[in-house]
View 1 (tube, rainbow, N blue to C red):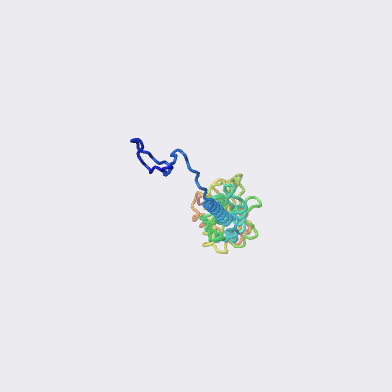
View 2: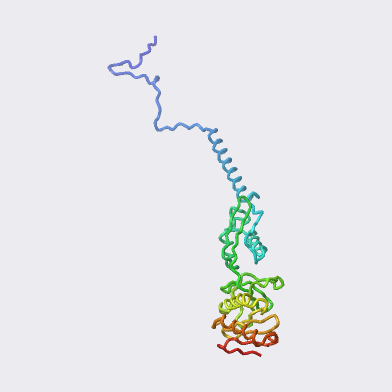
Length: 288
C-alpha cells in the first residue's frame, strides 16, 4: 500500500517540503514580451497623417495660386509712367529669393529688395509697399519736387534741385511751360544719374524763370537756359533767339531790373533784334 505524505511533513526529524505545489520562477529568465500590433499600426497612421497635413500645407503655402500676386496697383506718379515701376515689379516676380521662395507669392515677396532697387534707380521723396491679402501688391510713391528739365544732346531729363535725374522724358510731351529748360553745353556731363555742374545753375535758372514770369509776363518769352564753359553764368535764350547773360554770383533781381529798364526805355521794339545782352558787369550793360 502506497502512502502519501502530507505537505511539509517531518521525516526523520527533518521538515519535508513538497515542491510540486510551488510555482518556481527563474529571476534571470526574461519572458518574451507580447507584440502589440495595434500600437504599431496607430503610429504608422499618425505619421502618414502628419506627412499628409504637412504636404498639403506646404503645397498651399508654396504652390497654391491663392497667394499668387495677380494685381499690382501704383499710386502717386504724375511725371513718371507707371510702366517703369511695373517693369521693375515684374522682373522681381519672375525670380526667387533664397533659391526656393517664389517672388510672385505675396507671402514671400521681398519688399526691402524692391524698395532698395527703386531708390537706387529713381529719386523719389518716398516709396512704400503694402500687401493686400491674399494677392494684391500696392506701391505708394511720393515724387520729389521737379526743378527743371535738363537737356544733353538729344536727351531730356526731369531733374530735382539737387541735380539728380528723376526720369527721362520726351520733349514732345513738354507742352506746359511750367519749369525751366536748361541745355548743357559744358564739357561736364551726367554721371550716375546726376548732373555734374554746380546746382547753383539750376537754382538761378528756376529763380529767373519765376521772377520773369511775374515781372515781365508776355514781355520776354523764354525758350531755354544754357550752361556752357562760361563760369558763374546762366544764359537765357528768348523765343526770338536773343541770348541774355546773367551772373549767378550777382543779385538776379538787380540784373532783371537792368534788363527791363533798357528794354522798355532804350531798345523797345528793337529788343528782339539783338544778338546778345550781357548783364554781368555791375551797372553796365553790353549788347549787340
